[in-house]
Image 1 (cartoon, rainbow, N blue to C red):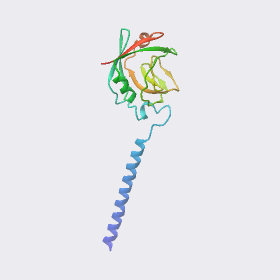
Image 2 (cartoon, rainbow, N blue to C red; image 1 turned 90 degrees about the horizontal axis):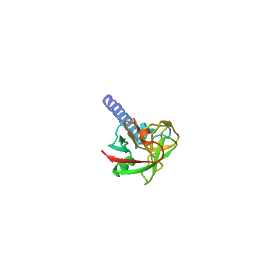
Image 3 (cartoon, helix red, strand yellow; image 1 turned 180 degrees about the vertical axis):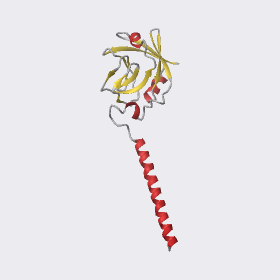
Image 4 (tube, rainbow, N blue to C red; image 1 turned 120 degrees about the vertical axis):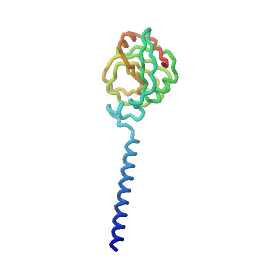
Length: 170
């Protein structure tokens, strides 16, 4: 009788531990499957498609006689962008801080960027490639394509007006 009570108590404890383990596993799994919150800080840290620590390859951006290394983001859009290289885009001036090109559609993973940094290469909507050459705050949503590693001389190379920009694999 005493042994039976101990076995029942031990069984109840074991079942409780199993239930707790299953509950914790389900809780962890559902939290990692949740989409990123829709806010300005969701950007690089939480967006499920953008993984800043796991960047893809580097490609070369040539503007006139200047070459810049562009570290691609880990997004579907960046993968398709890189797969299409080499190519040359005639990019137009906008707002005194960016060059843009409207072309073919790419997959989107838009997020609230918050701050644009010099050298950011972004996709606006699904078909507008934008290369930024000044830092500024924004409320617009973009899909990250990549970032120029060393932006020294970028603004001068881009100059005013339209410019041809060549993208090639290194």
